[in-house]
Length: 438
Image 1 (tube, rainbow, N blue to C red):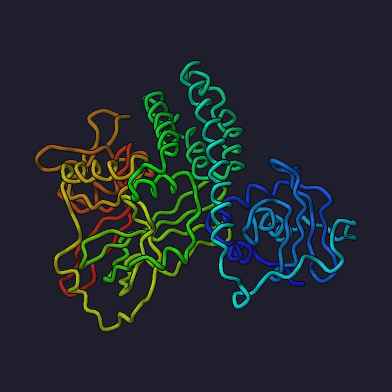
Image 2 (cartoon, helix red, strand yellow):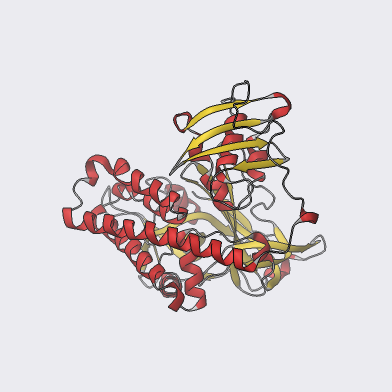
């Protein structure tokens, strides 16, 4: 059987949570009795919170002794990734592997009507796992405050990895991601203050999850999202859609754990609202390029649940060949620094764990008075925001502006503003130009 690519393996994942959880489980040290047989059958034992027996017939059926109801589960996906990487040697299947391979999974046409009682039982079981994991996290957070933060300078990464792995086992991958982002805060000035803020945010998430049933629907959905509860794409697509001409203003690529992440920011030219397309890939597999920066989409989008949520899925799309650029006649959403600060306050009120907000600032790049100090974007009236640039000194942005007011698209966050693209109107009949500045 032809070996799958990593993109094929990740495409088989039932949801984004499984896609993120599988790559960390490919380490050889946690696998035993692993092998592949004639016809492509794969098997192995994966050690996690318990040792699970995994049998995979790629593209046909998947079996695992773990309690997950997903198919394929993260252990089956990890075995497929090991096969892709050439880490599964040929051999004779052990006695615990069925001679005929795993039972064939049901096709979509054979799928039964979901059992509401069984679904409720699974949800309650997951909630109990998450509750137990977050209680353990809260004790760890209290230990950090009680013993002080100085130890973080010596072993920041090892300090969080154990508890992050425990959160993955507790089915709270979102919390694990937040924990693994903590060591990066030590690169900032006044890092103890930033670290303490982040630890307080995690404690707030623990408290919010304990009172999940008493929260307003939007805030409860936000808490679930931050913890890492999966949301099925079908459920998102069943939500009301927003129809508009969506302009892809900018894209930001980053590393999220062992996955590459791409955020494509869309501006609704009629609804005057923001939306975000999010995609993941393992390094080298290639990120989704179906929507390019500068492209105009005539489409329906479906928003994920949650207060202040920008993430969407694309629904129905229509041809845009005859759609004129005057749909942008009211311009992009440029705003002064003070207005962006007020909007950021509203964003944090809706989602206290927000870490980015799409923004187009109309401001002047200002270099520091002394070497080593931060750059800023400043209004003509004086209010300014710190620049968090990909390079230490964003001279290209100052050169492109000519020292005058410019419109810069980027992401506003707790540390300041990260510039992504300079927006230039160009000729009157042309589409707006997007000039990379970061």
